[in-house]
Image (cartoon, rainbow, N blue to C red; front, top):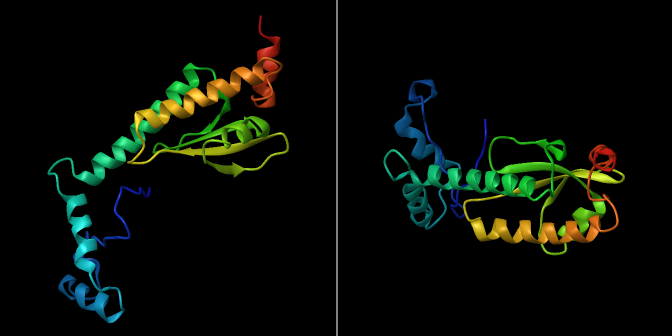
Length: 177
């Protein structure tokens, strides 16, 4: 199962898909919520977000937002590959959603972090795995700004070495004709 954040602020929805599987009739769900304190004051304002997310017919807003986040991840991956910032060999994992996990030299990643935030997925000595995320709010301009900065940092670092690349990719780069 995948969980996707699609833009609601402090709002969650419980969608009962199979009411027959519940120990009580589905109509009792609202009373269970209230008995357990799951109904905060002003909840109707939060519920309005959920209603908006579920509206839109065949393409509800939550699905539009999720697809946009996934499209931005694909754009990021394609542009980083096209510019040579990453290679197919440095892509560790693409979960099929809005995340891209890549292996980079720690120094190169540190330079990227001077202007952009992203998570360390798995620490290593010289290189580590990093998780780049996109969201429903990511714009093509955001992707372009990250790629442009990464290319600038890459140009600086490749002027003297292939230190930005994982060791296996760096070795292949230096031995290529």
